[in-house]
Image (cartoon, rainbow, N blue to C red; front, side):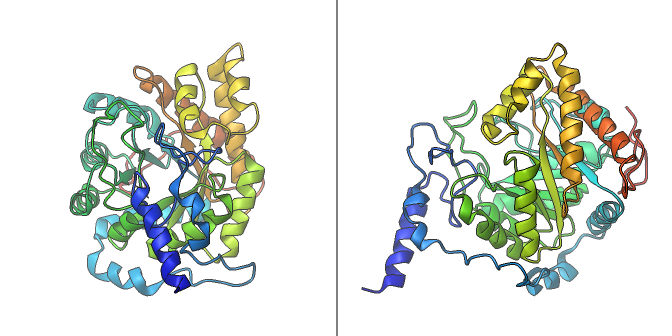
Length: 396
């Protein structure tokens, strides 16, 4: 028997059985008990075929990779939007001077006024607002429309794009519309299965996973980011899967929750050892109420610092405790070697989005005030920032 052919077939079978058709391996939704993120599905299909893992082992320390593969740099000269390139360059320049803050933007779905109101609270202090996927609402405005609503307001937008509801043709159009809207960056993820949300009746698409979406987004001008989940099983294979994304065209890596600064520091050190010289942002949970804790717990349970949720929720003033804890944890993340900034990560249950945006803004203000007092840091004092894209202030 041809062992190589047998291994390939085994991997292909795992892909076919996966509810999300993950061609490049397991998503970050694998539970600590090895369960698939889809309720009732059972174990992740890939964990039985790890001998057929298709990605090479990451280089050991000292063996450098080419950090800028020619595969997409040549594309950039032909396909780059000048405005998008300028926006991305401005963000890179800011990150070279000081730690940067990319904040998830909690906003009610299907509400342009709600989106603007949340952005008006958060955009004056954060370097960019991440328009991610609402954890509980699967019907919402398309990424490019949300991006247009905010870029026209002077907000620096980091647009999330996923493959749950769109095939590759629709994704290509969505990405092009985001670029036309003037986004600074595109965050490329596979996306949660429709079973996780209020529209479990919707058919999953997943024509492309995160690697395929990165391939569509690269070279168009905006920064391209992807997620790294070091704590998700199989933890010992996660870095090699991340390198597959990087080699496809990733400029920025978001390091997901993995137990706190020690786990993040180890993950970042291993990533930097591979030769990756792009930006690295460490995810920091935003928990300031029961409404925000419920959202964070839905995707990060067991991967937060020990006792983090309980300490905030048991405090006499959870909001103040959460703002203090978030700013302190973010400052510790920024102090780690190889970390360029943080992603303030979270959301809120329906009706609490505006309060969550305000609390996230307060974490950012407190973090910025602390970072200016940190030796060797050139971050700005707390207060409104100007848009690195337009130079205009974003006023509430």
